[in-house]
Image: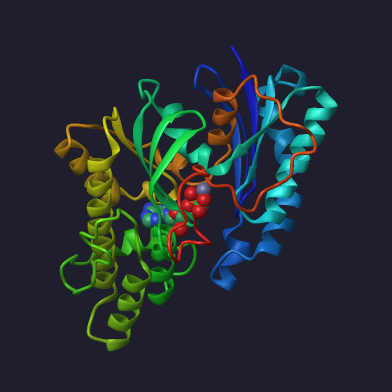
Length: 342
Ligand code: KG4
Ligand code: ZN
């Protein structure tokens, strides 16, 4: 049985985990930086990098202690090497390099997006390639066909905001604080999803790409009008976003060829209303629906360690650089307006 240590530091979660090849999360710790960033209404890269630097080393020690193992019991050290906020990624990657060197264990540089993309296989051993993946987080919003480890074909991306970003901006408009996704979901429970007429950008357009900037602006105008209850705004926003996702997914599934399942991953996959809508869509297409448990959807190190398990045998050079951008499908064409989010 193989054991991999995973390190995640690409955004505002410092996380360390030990995962084995039997799909057991042997130990893990996650330190959120929500409190540090909350006064600014979003993640401040410099604050994030400092917090990772302060927290990471003691967390690595604690996780090894929790599992009662030493570095020499580990088969590889996997760390997020991008994409993400470069200062934070460097903190995690440099730490992993030092551990790999000290313990003479291989370093596996993991693409954070691959961590999300493969996390459903950690949660469900019966999930086989190929599968359709909706990857929805704060920085990314993509539909991919996953044919194997490292084999991703991107069918859709966003031309402006990511879905999680749209949730966060809506939360800001409604004064719900940061991070916004869970707060919008909670408030929406008391609202009517049909109360506020909001646009569904790109609905039925032939390419399956996403756009959420216009929806966010419409939420802002509706809020400023003073005509609506915040809970109705939250519920109506959430419903509009889900309608867009459903439509874009249908377009993609029609173009994708045979797949074994519809899979959702990334922070927004923690949203119960989104999950329920996707489950219905999957059954319409006769597909299994697989979503990791919410704690595996938002950023964590178990998914990074698991990607390391999937990539065992690989050994990256200690010279490898942290990457602010690292697309899962480098061959995918650039989409107008999507430069930052591809
Ligand atoms: O995957 P993740 O933890 O970090 C990134 O790689 O971006 O995703 C974070 C994003 C944030 O935008 C957050 O608001 C959103 O996921 N999110 C949610 C929920 N939980 C997290 N969005 C909607 N509903 C939720 N329950
Ligand atoms: Zn993420």
